[in-house]
Image: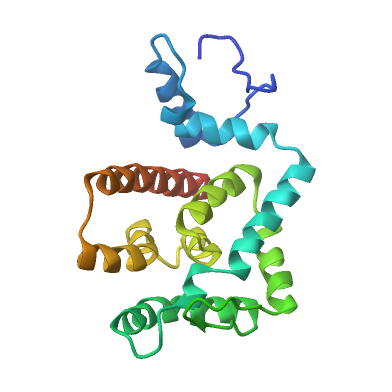
Length: 212
């Protein structure tokens, strides 16, 4: 940026091959006046995390994401026959059908609070889908999956199956249902705004990575 190599928090030199991502990083640093706040620098933060993460840490992160898939938000529904269960089914079943084709296996759906145990085949297939993902893409996927509690939604965004806006609506179904009944507090609106911003920033970075 100023002819001095940019280094990560672990002192690794940051080399970015993606022009759009590099521009995003440059733009963030151009706005820094005094104090550096990485929470306001999503491009820089994602790049730093990706460069500093070891191969072993990447494998652990992929295992973590598979864990989300094994207890995916979309597999847990309200009691059968309820209005919420019908909304969940109408909204989530198309993605369940899609991912079952990708995995060549069947997911177990739970109604109520009873935990489900998915098959070991599904775990293996999730791992296969995540295996070729590059470091920066993996960093962003972690953000999307963690925020949505759904590896399925993360993979759907990654492959272009659904748009970021559609993904946001799908992951919010349970919360929106409760809010419609009990109302929304000011603190919840503030939290929603922050969460949505983080989610959309991650989607934007992911799209740039894929465009190259």
